[in-house]
Image (cartoon, rainbow, N blue to C red):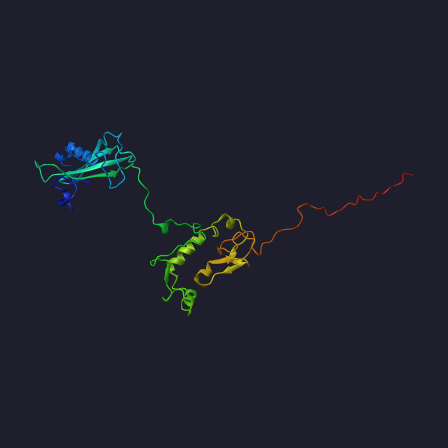
Length: 279
């Protein structure tokens, strides 16, 4: 980053950006290019990386002038293509400024910025937001933060009678229990999951889990909508299922076991032969 002279546009902060840039500043392309070339000289570091050096084969790291942008009544930014290897679509942005007509044009800032089509790294996502169901293996630890909105201190009153009863149980030792937000997130996830009413298995089932003898209802406020399947041959055995879920292993399912081969009411016995005399 370069600041070779006075006249930085910081004093213009808060002032409206003009629709058209100052003519003198817009024509200062040569001043801006010289500043960009000085910043991009061989061996220079454009973005603060201690290991980045300019490829010796790149004779002109500053490419064509690609446009200008007014920053205020006394400042304009000039953009130049970057020829740095690995910086496809990036641009040199050089902000020039002056204190008024006829005054010297000075360089306020030189920086390498990604353009509209630049190759950039994806947005950083914290590790606890990257973990997905199934990622946690044997021996792995996944701590929750103290500000996790899904949990509430166990000593606080809850709107779930079952949760409140457990939270006040002496000696249980649970510091936190599910909050309302935590229960709503879980309910939404279970309802829209593989064992909810929208799954293909549920849509083809003869009846729902709410009427199945293998359905174990959850305690508390979640019991009105969810339970656990206890049928070992069912696809949801041991899983939390919606009362609206269902499968072909419903306890009351009935299958017609009669023969599909039609049998006539009159049966002919052809095991014996009857002879009739012709006398």
